[in-house]
Amino acid sequence: MDEIDAAQKAERLFREGALASMRRPKAAARESLTHCVDCGEEIPEKRRLAIQGCRRCRECQEEFDKEAPW
Image 1 (cartoon, one colour):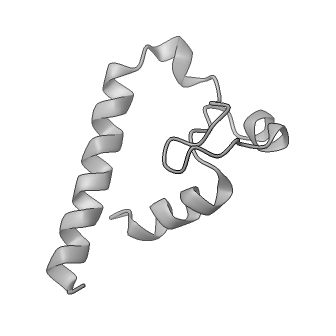
Image 2 (cartoon, rainbow, N blue to C red):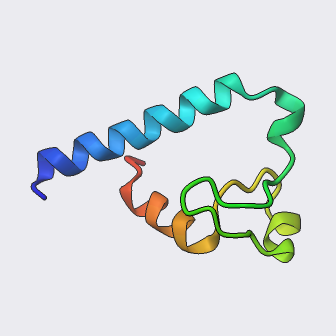
């Protein structure tokens, strides 16, 4: 994957996340999900309680953060 492909992927992930957060009601944004939006695995309860609005398991969040443009 070259730099342009990586940049396009990061931009797509960022845009998808921004659009999803705009569609989500504000009250629901504070509730953690029980299953990861990327892999579908259950998110451990400790993580859901520690990170308000958690949407990804630790592994998927780390991958998402690596690809994010910030």
